[in-house]
Amino acid sequence: MPLALYDTWSRTVRTFTPIDAGRVGMYCCGPTVYDDAHIGNLRTYVFEDVLRRVLMRNGYDVQHVVNITDVGHLTSDADEGEDKMEKGSRRTGESAWAMARRYTDAFVRDWRALRLLEPTVWCRATDHISEQIVFVDRLVRAGYVYRTEDGLYFDSSQQDDYGYLARLNRTGLHAGKRVALGEKKNITDFALWKFSPTGVKRQMEWDSPWGRGFPGWHIECSAMSAKYLGTLFDIHCGGEDHVAVHHSNEIAQTQAAHGTRLANFWMHGHFLTLDADTKMSKSSGDFVRLQTLQRRNVDPIAYRYLCLTAHYRSKLRFTWASLEAAQTALNRLRHFYSGLPGGGRIDPNFEARFDAEVNEDLNAPRALAVLWDLVKSDLPPSTLRATLDSFDVVLGLGLRDWNPVAPEVPADARVLLGERERARAESDWAKADQIRETLRALGWRVEDTNEGQRLFRIALPSTIALPCAEN
Ligand code: AMP
Ligand code: ZN
Image 1: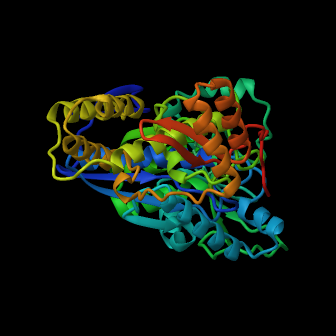
Image 2 (image 1 turned 30 degrees about the vertical axis):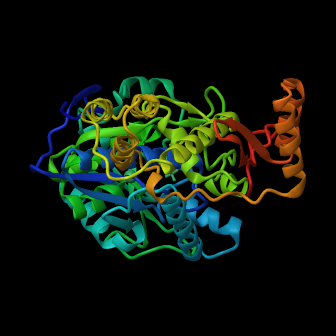
């Protein structure tokens, strides 16, 4: 079953063929480090991690580049407002530089807690100012740039197919939107270089041939991806919000400067939402961090498992109940796995079924269904273990690294457990259920297994109301 992936550019699932045999270049837009990442952002990185693992499973050597946006991302994607970094620095009371370092470190911690594979290259926008200046200069010389009071802008009207990735209706945009154009010639034009406002000393600013200032947000990704992967590479990823503006602009710049549409496949993860439609977003403050889950004793890998239960191209609505269900499923899987002996061989039928699912545009939920079919099968235990090991190379749940540690059960819970055991022996199910609820209120979930009652620590009071911002 050849690998097929959905390409936003063509709006089709098509067979993946690399530009250079055996190698894949993959660029993923990283975080803007003016605050912690939220679990919505992290959903996108989990999708990209699964993509990378599936590419590796198909035998490719993957060059995976992830950037850190530490300058230039304005509070509005339409180039209005303030730099998120300067604004964030006022909020936290640190310098923009110190804040960027702190949130970058926090991001890398989240990354590792989710067992995301380390990128081949992490790159910061502020470490690549000269590459961005060279890129803008190339656009200036190619005649795509005009100057206004506050910066240099890309003239999108010069490209007939500008915005094709988003199937943008430019005429409709002009007619329908009453936005302040300022000195911009077209609504879809965007900043390449912004001047520091006169009389204001910005914390992050650099000299350029056009005046002191800072790069626009989009140019960093075109410049850094060109540096590390070349001007046409295999896959460019990000969240679905990047299609209309950020990625459309990356393509426009690269096409103008180098004549390519930057990447052969454009792939986008869909949002984690709080309710039917509300996107979890950093700027609104309605967000949940990975640390929030960890403080409530939820294993980050349970969140990873939750992400795998939805296809990356459908919205995933976050609820504490679904997270708890993911933790329960993961616990079951871990306990099951840890009881299996080594030394077996992979079952070829199950492996073929699993590969068919992940190769069909990364169908993780169906791959999980194959996994649970395997668990329920009557294959020899050592075969089960070897096959689960093989699945886990793609799922990244770290089954091998997990050690069952019996939680320390306090005396009150132990007494209740004993009473429940007696109630069950006497078939007093009402009492057994009532004790189960009492244990739950004490922070323990009890599961009845063939070996007796088993306790799991929980820290997800079902009464927590969302949104749950913690600034
Ligand atoms: P940012 O830090 O805002 O630049 O975003 C980092 C990544 O997270 C980008 O790829 C975004 O498209 C993605 N993203 C932002 N919000 C969400 C969300 N609610 N669900 C999934 N991905 C998101
Ligand atoms: Zn980007």
